[in-house]
Length: 482
Ligand code: GLU
Image (cartoon, rainbow, N blue to C red; front, top):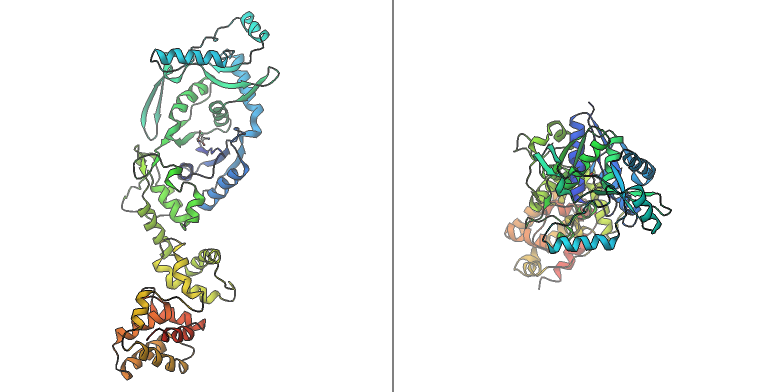
């Protein structure tokens, strides 16, 4: 048997982290078994589906590296196939036209609620005679198609994550609506649960891997497979992603879509690595950093947790920093350029390439997210800097001006600056001016960067020197020394 799985997002929002994580598990399972991964867009809800969301889903999956083997298949192109499926069940006597009106349904519901019963349809039109049907039609009533659900049935499946699952037919709310009427009395649009089953049968899906919010749907869907005498696939219901309070991660938590994470400066391999760990752990649980391919080799649902997976921002940050710190400088530079541009920094990416790479390697080890680069790099994109209070008081220390003046003088003979020339210059100034090395270093940092903290001073200076920013800043700093 060839494993065939699918991800079936509805384009009613941007690619959500929960959907993407379900995508990760589908992808890992397919790759582990040398199977196929299909992408199906469930866009039958025309009111809520939007092209921009489909685009966001496709782009997000591509960005994460979750390549699919077939698709995207759009449900909106398959409406006739679903209608045909509805007709088949009507012909088999497994479904029927139900003429109960909205008012009648509401009365039924109110009576059930008054009796403290769970609302359910009472199957009142399951066995209408042709004459009764004709009478309802003559009244001009519209209808829905309902699929018969046997209250006595026990529906059992062995979930790959949750083990034995069992539902009673009587818990499914009565005979279920599978399609609405179209104008003119024909069968109209099929409903979600029905379309999913038709597609999964048609596409020969062997394993349905989806979020645990679909468990009740699975019970209904199994009955539909049986109605079509089709093989029931295996099911795996993946745990929800929870926020710090243990509630389902939602819009209220700020970021939920993959594009939000991208914008926040997370990179795809780190995010996808993190999502893999949201509910799954590798056999060697000390191993935390791996590619999708490496995870696929080891992936199985035996190691997927039943309990919800808490979203841990610190862990994601840590993983992201590990990936950033290990990126080749060329790649890191490519990733940083858009952030520098977006911050309004002006530079020529081609002519300044060597400098930009130097800057990337200077700040790279301090980055947690790509966005951190904006503040860290600011001082390399403007000729002069603003001086922090700390820096200003450093510059007022006794000896600071003497040190800076001596460096300015020595700078003329040491062009272009190199690492060893800079080191020697500092040594010489310390010796000749009889100053403390710490004082000279701190004053130099204050003068060149406007701050007392930051990346390696000599490396920063070398970049500023190539930009011709060091001399003007040393001069500017001198005006602050009194
Ligand atoms: N379209 C459904 C959703 O976005 C998924 C359906 C399924 O995986 O069966 O939640």
